[in-house]
Image (cartoon, rainbow, N blue to C red; front, side, top):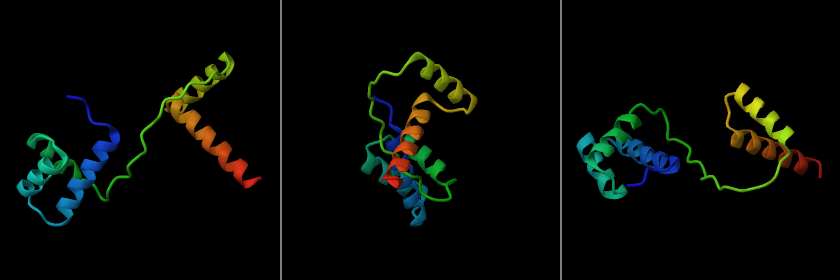
Length: 109
């Protein structure tokens, strides 16, 4: 069986959060999760336990799409150093840089 994506986990946690917020007891909420999300009863209880600790529903991130492009070795080395120093992945650094660039380009014209 394939692992759940981050988006699936967030959707299931949010569903569990909503069930608990409506006042359903654990057994009824677990049965609903099993039925609606095709997961095991054991996993349903895990989602409910984690959802019980949430203060609000989780945002659901859009899935990543792989792309390929060429960047010089110097730039890659700089990205790796920056990413490591800031506890980020290369993808996070590149995505943030692109979003910042696009945001600035929109403002200036």
